[in-house]
Length: 375
Image 1 (cartoon, rainbow, N blue to C red):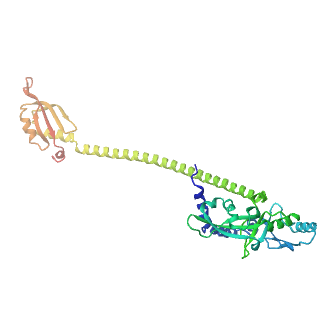
Image 2 (image 1 turned 120 degrees about the vertical axis):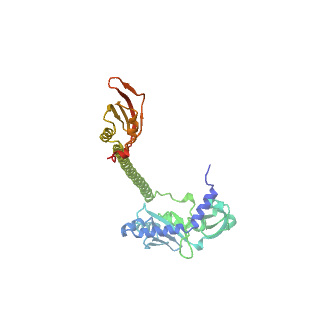
């Protein structure tokens, strides 16, 4: 299934030919070529070596288009062999593989018609116009050499303008025969318009047009292929460099991320160590000083009391076990101290028959903030 219909394709081609882009690209190419060195510019602009042939009843002329030099003017009354030798000498300075012979006929010998046809005719204008020859000219199709050129002139919507150039075979065949006698076989037959410019057509039928192997075109295709390969190689190299740079950047980012992770771990450990240190310092600052607690007990307990055990935990809890003459009075004794809070007896007071005193267990809480200021 075609993505683009032939009609749409012809519309695109016609729009392209009528747009200013071809002229702009031609001008741009000329400006770029002008920047090349003289010899290289001459080689690029050289193109085929075209010989402009003109035939009239009295003489045959050959002019080199590249230089504008007249190579030969051969009289029609000379012997055929002399004409052939003269023409061969005129062509001696041109490369046969690069030589193109162009027979140019005047506009007076050619019939020109401008036709307005449907846009579909642009797909194969020569074939379409071939059916119109008997209506557009006073000759039958087999009596004419003709060609059709797409015009750049504006046309009504859905139509196209075609230029028909037709020459009677009776006029053109004698010219071709005269050229064949001297060994000249034109590659194309063009028409010189009234302004001196060529019409850009080829009146020769397709079957009579010589087929030449254009070596320059082959070289151009090879150069184009080489350019494409070089572009692909350059793009591949550029892509490889970008990938290598990306891989290096990814490695650097991974290394930096590992360093950042390690730094974060070290920072977390440092913060934890500082917090633990502060906690220990705080706990140490808040813990009751054991010596001051013992000193306060020594001052508060009566002389007839002694202790069997004294326990002071981290939270300031105090547990005392011992004997005293009046164990119950110890609660009030320690309660009057600014160091101890909530003193109370734990368990039952038991008399000791051996000593005559009371065995007790007393618990209290040390006021941490006041221990240092007790004295």
